[in-house]
Length: 213
Image (cartoon, rainbow, N blue to C red; front, side):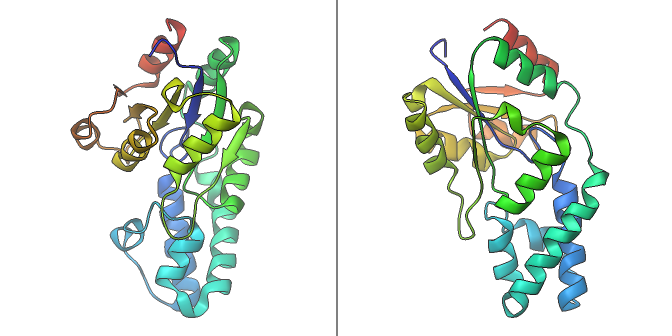
């Protein structure tokens, strides 16, 4: 752990409470274009794919129109989550101060992560930003890719996420897994079952760990 030199963040549920906005925007876009009212569960079963993949799974016959409507709806709804979690900026500033390399890997597509980063004015913190794939999670591959760009071993890199899949992808890549459960959409017990290297319930705990690293 003392060899960590790079920190890679997930976005939704880790830096900001944006998952409810994503789900709402999908529901509104699908209903607007296809007339179908999808439940939260019907949408979240495809999480891990980018929005392109979710739209392809649930509205294949109206793909282009639904995707365009989703991106427009997400941008319109982003005011519902205008800020990062309290304390995240301090965390990022502390990592910069301690000269950590910082990057972002998200399951979101390029359009929506660009909207989020611009809206929250945090793109400047991330040396690299990798977005999702329409067919599957590629976070493990992205962790490996960024580690190589940094000229680091994956063991020198930590990935921070709020879902069990984040822990699995991190371990697949051979990186140090940090799970966080400060979002309402995260489940502490489910994260614990996947044995992350570290698990934080509060941002202040995480900030304290960085300050004393």
